[in-house]
Amino acid sequence: MTWTASVLTLYPEMFPGPLGVSLAGRALQDGLWSLETVQIRDFATDRHRSVDDTPAGGGAGMVMRADVLAAAVDDMLERRPGVPMLAMTPRGRPLTQAMVRELAAGPGLSVLCGRFEGIDERLFEARPVVPVSIGDYVLSGGETAAMVLLDACVRLLPGVMGAPTSGEEESFEAGLLEYPHYTRPQEWEGRTIPEVLRSGDHAKIAAWRKARAVEDTRSRRPDLMERHWGAPRQPPSGERQDDEGELT
Image (tube, rainbow, N blue to C red; front, side, top):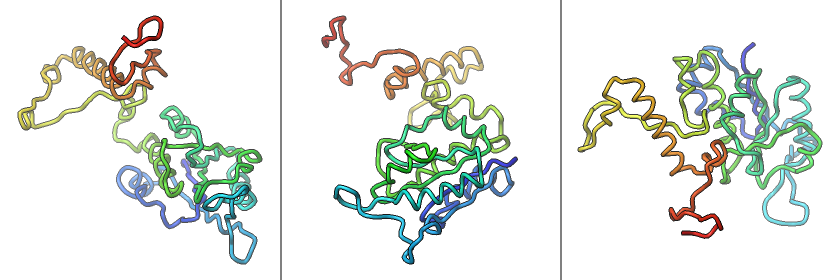
Protein backbone atom coordinates (compact mmCIF):
# COMPACT_ATOMS: atom_id res chain seq x y z
CA MET A 1 0.00 0.00 0.00
CA THR A 2 1.32 3.43 -0.94
CA TRP A 3 2.02 5.84 1.92
CA THR A 4 -0.54 8.60 1.45
CA ALA A 5 -0.73 12.12 2.81
CA SER A 6 -4.02 14.03 2.91
CA VAL A 7 -3.85 17.77 3.60
CA LEU A 8 -6.91 19.74 4.72
CA THR A 9 -6.22 23.35 3.85
CA LEU A 10 -7.65 26.67 2.71
CA TYR A 11 -4.85 26.88 0.15
CA PRO A 12 -4.56 23.59 -1.76
CA GLU A 13 -2.64 25.41 -4.49
CA MET A 14 0.36 25.56 -2.14
CA PHE A 15 0.91 21.82 -2.63
CA PRO A 16 2.99 19.94 -3.52
CA GLY A 17 5.24 23.03 -3.54
CA PRO A 18 8.71 22.04 -2.25
CA LEU A 19 7.45 18.47 -1.89
CA GLY A 20 7.34 18.26 -5.68
CA VAL A 21 11.11 18.53 -6.13
CA SER A 22 14.28 16.72 -5.00
CA LEU A 23 13.88 13.45 -3.04
CA ALA A 24 10.22 13.93 -2.14
CA GLY A 25 9.33 15.05 -5.67
CA ARG A 26 11.02 12.11 -7.35
CA ALA A 27 9.40 9.73 -4.88
CA LEU A 28 6.02 11.31 -5.61
CA GLN A 29 6.52 10.83 -9.35
CA ASP A 30 7.68 7.25 -8.83
CA GLY A 31 4.60 6.42 -6.77
CA LEU A 32 6.47 5.79 -3.51
CA TRP A 33 3.96 8.09 -1.81
CA SER A 34 0.87 10.02 -2.82
CA LEU A 35 -0.60 13.38 -1.90
CA GLU A 36 -4.13 14.71 -1.93
CA THR A 37 -5.45 18.09 -0.84
CA VAL A 38 -8.90 18.88 0.52
CA GLN A 39 -10.38 22.37 0.39
CA ILE A 40 -11.82 23.09 3.84
CA ARG A 41 -14.25 25.66 2.40
CA ASP A 42 -16.07 22.84 0.62
CA PHE A 43 -17.50 21.90 4.02
CA ALA A 44 -18.87 25.35 4.84
CA THR A 45 -22.67 25.60 4.85
CA ASP A 46 -23.39 29.28 4.14
CA ARG A 47 -23.36 30.99 0.78
CA HIS A 48 -20.13 32.83 1.65
CA ARG A 49 -18.37 29.53 2.44
CA SER A 50 -17.29 30.95 5.80
CA VAL A 51 -14.73 28.95 7.79
CA ASP A 52 -13.96 31.42 10.59
CA ASP A 53 -15.59 33.81 13.03
CA THR A 54 -14.66 36.34 15.71
CA PRO A 55 -13.03 34.98 18.90
CA ALA A 56 -15.26 34.42 21.93
CA GLY A 57 -14.32 36.87 24.66
CA GLY A 58 -13.04 39.40 22.17
CA GLY A 59 -9.62 39.97 20.72
CA ALA A 60 -7.91 40.45 17.40
CA GLY A 61 -8.18 38.19 14.39
CA MET A 62 -10.49 35.32 13.56
CA VAL A 63 -10.80 31.71 14.73
CA MET A 64 -11.42 28.66 12.54
CA ARG A 65 -14.88 27.24 13.27
CA ALA A 66 -15.23 23.84 14.93
CA ASP A 67 -18.35 22.87 12.99
CA VAL A 68 -16.80 23.41 9.57
CA LEU A 69 -13.52 21.74 10.50
CA ALA A 70 -15.34 18.82 12.11
CA ALA A 71 -17.23 18.19 8.88
CA ALA A 72 -13.95 18.09 6.95
CA VAL A 73 -12.30 15.90 9.59
CA ASP A 74 -15.26 13.50 9.73
CA ASP A 75 -15.17 13.06 5.98
CA MET A 76 -11.46 12.26 6.10
CA LEU A 77 -11.81 9.86 9.04
CA GLU A 78 -14.57 8.02 7.18
CA ARG A 79 -12.55 7.79 3.98
CA ARG A 80 -9.29 6.88 5.71
CA PRO A 81 -10.13 5.05 8.95
CA GLY A 82 -7.18 4.27 11.17
CA VAL A 83 -4.95 6.94 9.61
CA PRO A 84 -3.55 9.46 12.13
CA MET A 85 -5.08 12.93 11.96
CA LEU A 86 -2.75 15.77 12.97
CA ALA A 87 -3.27 19.53 13.16
CA MET A 88 -0.37 21.93 12.73
CA THR A 89 -0.53 24.55 15.47
CA PRO A 90 1.96 26.32 17.79
CA ARG A 91 -0.10 24.94 20.69
CA GLY A 92 0.71 21.36 19.73
CA ARG A 93 3.17 18.79 21.05
CA PRO A 94 6.67 19.21 19.61
CA LEU A 95 7.43 17.23 16.48
CA THR A 96 10.29 14.81 17.12
CA GLN A 97 12.26 12.38 15.02
CA ALA A 98 10.71 9.51 16.98
CA MET A 99 7.24 10.75 16.03
CA VAL A 100 8.32 11.12 12.41
CA ARG A 101 9.62 7.53 12.32
CA GLU A 102 6.36 6.25 13.78
CA LEU A 103 4.29 8.13 11.21
CA ALA A 104 6.53 7.06 8.32
CA ALA A 105 6.11 3.42 9.35
CA GLY A 106 2.33 3.62 9.05
CA PRO A 107 -0.07 3.89 6.12
CA GLY A 108 0.24 7.66 5.91
CA LEU A 109 -1.37 10.60 7.67
CA SER A 110 -3.92 13.36 7.40
CA VAL A 111 -2.92 16.93 8.25
CA LEU A 112 -5.21 19.81 9.16
CA CYS A 113 -3.61 23.19 8.48
CA GLY A 114 -4.58 25.93 10.92
CA ARG A 115 -4.94 29.58 9.91
CA PHE A 116 -5.85 32.95 11.44
CA GLU A 117 -5.66 33.05 15.27
CA GLY A 118 -6.08 29.30 15.51
CA ILE A 119 -8.64 26.51 15.73
CA ASP A 120 -11.68 26.36 18.00
CA GLU A 121 -10.46 24.22 20.91
CA ARG A 122 -13.65 22.18 20.92
CA LEU A 123 -12.51 20.41 17.77
CA PHE A 124 -9.65 18.78 19.71
CA GLU A 125 -12.05 17.84 22.50
CA ALA A 126 -14.56 16.23 20.14
CA ARG A 127 -12.41 14.61 17.45
CA PRO A 128 -9.22 12.46 17.45
CA VAL A 129 -7.05 15.26 16.10
CA VAL A 130 -3.52 15.50 17.52
CA PRO A 131 -2.12 19.06 17.67
CA VAL A 132 1.53 19.17 16.58
CA SER A 133 4.07 22.02 16.49
CA ILE A 134 7.30 22.18 14.51
CA GLY A 135 8.88 24.78 16.78
CA ASP A 136 8.50 27.65 19.20
CA TYR A 137 7.56 30.28 16.65
CA VAL A 138 4.47 31.35 14.70
CA LEU A 139 3.89 30.99 10.96
CA SER A 140 1.20 32.54 8.77
CA GLY A 141 -0.49 29.17 8.51
CA GLY A 142 -0.11 25.45 8.97
CA GLU A 143 0.67 24.70 5.34
CA THR A 144 4.42 25.34 5.55
CA ALA A 145 4.52 23.40 8.83
CA ALA A 146 2.72 20.51 7.11
CA MET A 147 5.37 20.54 4.38
CA VAL A 148 8.07 20.21 7.02
CA LEU A 149 6.26 17.29 8.61
CA LEU A 150 5.65 15.53 5.30
CA ASP A 151 9.20 16.03 4.07
CA ALA A 152 10.55 14.54 7.31
CA CYS A 153 8.29 11.49 6.87
CA VAL A 154 8.69 10.94 3.13
CA ARG A 155 12.49 10.83 3.21
CA LEU A 156 12.27 7.82 5.55
CA LEU A 157 10.02 5.79 3.27
CA PRO A 158 11.61 2.70 1.68
CA GLY A 159 13.31 3.53 -1.60
CA VAL A 160 13.27 7.33 -1.19
CA MET A 161 16.86 7.74 0.01
CA GLY A 162 19.60 6.05 -1.97
CA ALA A 163 21.07 3.93 0.83
CA PRO A 164 18.83 2.21 3.40
CA THR A 165 21.22 3.34 6.16
CA SER A 166 21.21 7.03 5.13
CA GLY A 167 18.76 7.96 7.86
CA GLU A 168 20.40 6.07 10.70
CA GLU A 169 23.32 8.35 11.66
CA GLU A 170 21.55 11.69 11.72
CA SER A 171 20.72 14.37 14.24
CA PHE A 172 18.18 13.27 16.88
CA GLU A 173 18.26 9.57 15.94
CA ALA A 174 20.20 8.67 19.11
CA GLY A 175 19.29 11.75 21.11
CA LEU A 176 22.31 13.68 19.83
CA LEU A 177 23.08 16.16 17.11
CA GLU A 178 24.92 14.59 14.20
CA TYR A 179 28.71 14.85 14.04
CA PRO A 180 30.21 17.49 11.67
CA HIS A 181 30.96 16.62 8.04
CA TYR A 182 33.86 17.50 5.73
CA THR A 183 34.73 16.91 2.08
CA ARG A 184 37.27 18.03 -0.53
CA PRO A 185 39.32 20.14 -0.86
CA GLN A 186 41.48 18.87 2.01
CA GLU A 187 42.56 22.44 2.80
CA TRP A 188 40.31 25.48 2.41
CA GLU A 189 41.14 29.01 3.55
CA GLY A 190 43.82 27.62 5.84
CA ARG A 191 41.46 25.12 7.44
CA THR A 192 42.13 21.41 7.02
CA ILE A 193 39.99 18.32 7.41
CA PRO A 194 40.68 16.72 10.83
CA GLU A 195 43.53 14.26 10.50
CA VAL A 196 41.58 11.40 12.06
CA LEU A 197 39.09 11.50 9.16
CA ARG A 198 41.99 11.01 6.75
CA SER A 199 43.55 8.17 8.74
CA GLY A 200 41.53 5.31 7.31
CA ASP A 201 41.16 3.91 10.84
CA HIS A 202 37.42 3.25 11.05
CA ALA A 203 37.43 2.62 14.79
CA LYS A 204 39.15 5.94 15.50
CA ILE A 205 36.84 7.73 13.07
CA ALA A 206 33.76 6.28 14.78
CA ALA A 207 35.09 7.27 18.21
CA TRP A 208 35.87 10.82 17.01
CA ARG A 209 32.42 11.21 15.48
CA LYS A 210 30.71 10.02 18.66
CA ALA A 211 32.81 12.36 20.79
CA ARG A 212 32.07 15.34 18.55
CA ALA A 213 28.35 14.51 18.52
CA VAL A 214 28.32 14.54 22.31
CA GLU A 215 30.43 17.71 22.51
CA ASP A 216 28.32 19.63 20.00
CA THR A 217 25.04 18.50 21.55
CA ARG A 218 26.23 19.53 25.01
CA SER A 219 27.23 23.01 23.81
CA ARG A 220 24.42 23.69 21.31
CA ARG A 221 21.46 21.71 22.64
CA PRO A 222 21.90 21.00 26.36
CA ASP A 223 18.18 20.25 26.52
CA LEU A 224 18.78 17.14 24.39
CA MET A 225 21.55 15.98 26.71
CA GLU A 226 19.27 16.39 29.69
CA ARG A 227 16.32 14.69 28.00
CA HIS A 228 18.06 11.68 26.47
CA TRP A 229 21.26 11.23 28.44
CA GLY A 230 20.38 12.48 31.91
CA ALA A 231 23.17 15.08 31.81
CA PRO A 232 22.15 18.18 33.78
CA ARG A 233 22.17 21.49 31.97
CA GLN A 234 24.93 23.94 32.70
CA PRO A 235 24.07 27.62 33.14
CA PRO A 236 24.51 29.62 29.89
CA SER A 237 27.46 31.49 31.38
CA GLY A 238 29.40 28.26 31.78
CA GLU A 239 29.35 28.58 35.55
CA ARG A 240 28.80 25.39 37.49
CA GLN A 241 26.44 24.82 40.37
CA ASP A 242 27.62 23.40 43.68
CA ASP A 243 25.67 20.87 45.71
CA GLU A 244 23.59 23.63 47.26
CA GLY A 245 22.52 24.87 43.84
CA GLU A 246 24.62 28.02 44.12
CA LEU A 247 26.66 29.23 41.16
CA THR A 248 30.42 28.82 41.60
